[in-house]
Image 1: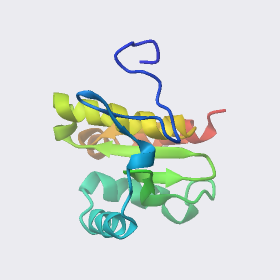
Image 2: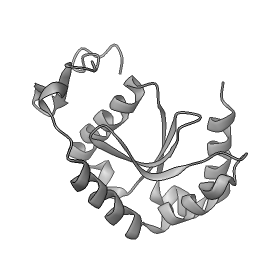
Image 3: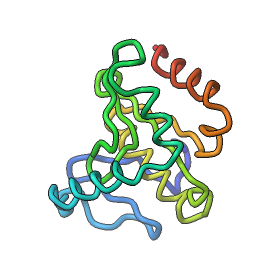
Length: 147
């Protein structure tokens, strides 16, 4: 993706915002309404998917190596499903709708933004989490112990 000319490098502090049509506006022009985002995050926490609930039960309260994870954590205009600030690690759980072309494009941007902030993002499909909880847990442990 880095060498793909259709996706120029993401720039912060006044750099371009990417959209399906290409560059639109800049970060300086975008305002993030904290109250709206806070309400949105609260709604996401109340309406967790089964897969999100399962992952939350694995990572909450320092259960993995004493690490603190937050759920529905804001990074710029995006909300990460789970985030560990100490490791700068995000865990995203995606449903089937993320397999559609427009959602794939949004997910690329949702991944590029945190990566530009030096946040690693790992993604799992809902059905993988539900069908292979142990395998997903092992992959999370690998990401945590990655250096």
